[in-house]
Image 1 (cartoon, rainbow, N blue to C red):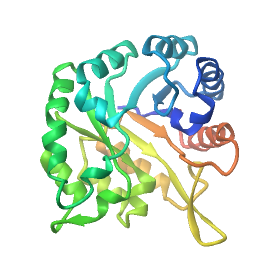
Image 2: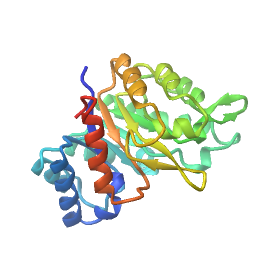
Image 3: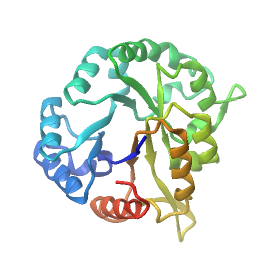
Image 4: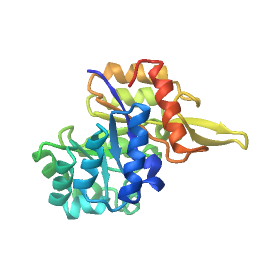
Length: 255
């Protein structure tokens, strides 16, 4: 299966809070060469308009990050909005803070499994995006392992984030293997080092993660469909970073 490179619109969230700005930003992303996008962090723009603007530039919406509480409290509306946008994967960007402790972690599957099953019944898939927190142990078990065991592959997929795996002290390729068959979408994110000795996010292949090795591991999975470039914080214009990443990955044959 060919893995398609996509743009995470969260990168340019400050340029996507109004319909006019989203229009301009999508146009810039499409002009660089991207064909798919993730919708996340944009303003309160109706799903119909988001879909129309993406169609205008030939951009397919492949993943969304929806409000975590809406996913469990307003599941039917979330499904309808993603249906309008033509999006198959409905994601949560971060585990809400209330679950990140030994007293409440077991509530996460209790709260989200009904929504995940309803999403699955609609023909879509609920997706979990990791940060570094998931690589700590609660009650003697890694949170990532707990999530894998608490949801079946048909109930929840994983949008593995390469930067946050590294930040959590784990091995990216090792986790690609552990999540085999459960990662239709991946967040490609590179880690560089600032002279003041702090980790920073940089365009793909301009940091220290071994992306040729990582990409080979993703290819070996056989089920990865979308490589979504994400950079939460840019040291320069995020549109410049979009272009650098696209060009760097194009040299390896990814578009």
